[in-house]
Every structure is written in structure tokens, then in C-alpha cells.
Image 1 (tube, helix red, strand yellow):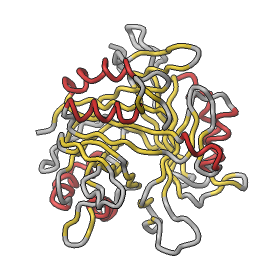
Image 2: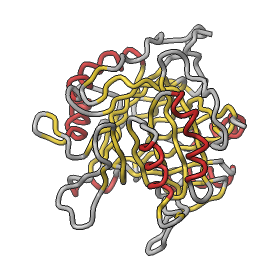
Image 3: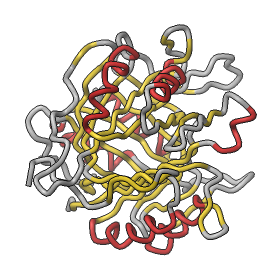
Image 4: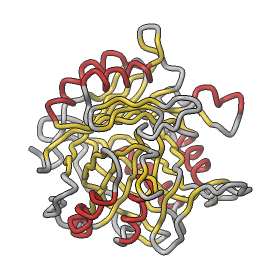
Length: 359
């Protein structure tokens, strides 16, 4: 049966350390030691954080400290036990805590998205697990595309846990069970019908989670606005939001790659941070599936830009996102009920879950 869960996400730098060792290793060790249901460590290709230092793989002098994102999902009780240890070792960086449903892919049914809300479905699986010559990532993407899901992208991980077992990428190894993620968004009724088919299609261990999200732009078409939530809940806890832009790496804005230009403009506008993750394959409704091809000169991979901030700051930065995606991109916005940002100026926010309904 499906279960109420939590998702813990940490944004930090590749060179960040904890107790004399790399923070990335320390975080993944925690996930392994706690037997987290699913976790994945991913390396970004561009971004900036609370120090406002740009990190990018486009410039060799800045590519030695790329942004990293660590994600952990499980039932609420297990993640709650993990939170204090994570907060204690993250010196500079952003930690968020969000509500999710850990879904049973063998069952459909009501996914619980209210009214005009959409659903974000995430599949955690081994990045090279195979059945009938097709990897789990390709199987998930094909199933989602056949079901008419508006957009999806596959992101390869470096380390993490699947079904509570730790798997870490190693040089010259097949790395079949090293965790990866497939992100997709769509209407809840479509996913309710899709879940059993998705479970049948995936080889090897996998975990599926469901979250509430709102699609607000799609290939220049306005489909909604960012959710109207208060800056604080009834207990005075701050509310946060995440904006995500999924586009092709070839897409342009003002003569430059859309993702790079958007990050630069957000940084100039004083945003708290932004991260770009490069997918290995994906699709967007109305367009062919895309991904890197052998010997191709031009990259055809999807890229995902995400940034998280308080409700007033998202409102201030929103016109910039609207301009960037006036003709292309899949843009979503979701509520983040808890976020803790630590930097040179100190710590802001916290990891107590706010209630967007005002309770």
C-alpha cells in the first residue's frame, strides 16, 4: 500500500567537507547506515549557492567545485531520524524537507492531488538495470511517453540506495544498480491508471514517489500561475517554493543557452541559488524523445534548472522566469514546507514542516 513519506534534499558544493572528509561521502554514508528506502547523489553542470559563486562545467577554472544534489526519500519516521544528523554536518548549503507519497506501483487509485493540482511522479531505479535489452531508465521513459505524460527526464546518479541497499559508481564498472531518477509531471488521473503498467515495465528494484506540483508554462503556453500560498503558516513558519524549468540543452534565450542565461540572470537578480542538472534522456509533449547520440556534434540532452526561495522572493523573480520561457520549456512550481539555508551570513529558515493550508 502507498504510505505517507518525506523527501530530504541537500544542495551543496562538490568540495564541501564535513569532519575532514567530503560532505557527499558523509551524506551517502548516512543514507546507507540508516537504510534509506531510496537516495541518490547527482552532480550538476552549473549553478550557484548562498555564497553566490558561479560553478559551471563550461569553464575549466570553475569546474572543480560543481554543485551537487543529494535526495533521500522514505517513510516519515525514518527521514525524521535522519534530519538532525544531516543538519549537523551541512555547513554551507540548502536543506529542504517535503511531504511525498511512497506509492505502490502495483496499485492505481486516487493519488490525492487536489483540484487544479498536477502530480510529480519520481521513479528511483538502477541506472543500467536491464530487461529484454532495455534499461530501467528507457523503460520508464517509454511507458510515461506512451501514456501521454507531458514531460519527463532521466537523471543519472553517482551514489545512493535503492530498496535500502547502497550502490556507488565505480570506474570501469557496469554500475547497473547505481541509483538514477526519472522525473515526470502530469494530471493525477493519468498516473493512477499508469502506476501498475510502470511497475510491470521496470526491471530490478525500484521506488516510486508522488508529490503535488503545478504546471505553469508549457512550450510558451500559460497553463497556470505559481500556487498562491501565504508567506508564513498559522504558526509563523516560513513557506518556500521551488520553480523548475525543463528544457533542451539546445534551447536559446537572448542568444545563449536558456539554462545558462537563466542561471546568470537569477544570480544578477540576487536569487538565493540555482542548480542545473543535465539529463541523459527525456521527452516533452509534441516533440520527439531526446538524448545524447554517439558521434553527435550537438548535445540533445534535457536540462533541469531548479531554484528554491521564500514565497515573496519567488514572486519577485517570477517575471524573469516568464520571460525566459516565453516560447519554450516545461515550468513547474511547488510548495516546499521546510528549508534551511546556511552560509557566511548565518542560518535562515528551519526544518520544521509548515502547513500550506494554514493549520
